[in-house]
Length: 131
Image (tube, rainbow, N blue to C red; front, side, top):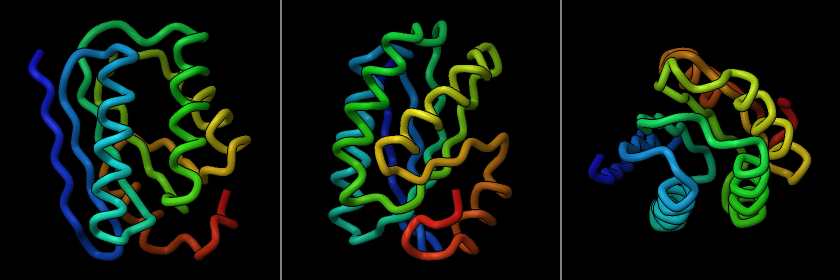
């Protein structure tokens, strides 16, 4: 599947949407593109809607990708709402990804829909206290 990335500044947060194949290189690519968009728009709250096709990443791949992404993001992102729109992806991997991100200083929450993610982003206190 062709890689597609979009970022739109909304009411106090950046709404990122990504499509493509689910693999390490695609995830690292959208992380890089997303951080650049956060810097460009001077926005530290981001909602990521991920529409990636293919199997879930392995445990090791998930750990490596999230640890690397969190290291890069923690200076630029205070709150990240994340939606994995592929129903075939393992839900336990999302919980694991949140745990790894939190340990590395990124306040990440996983959501099933945009409405709930937006509500959290617009009401969460500054500074990342709402974990």
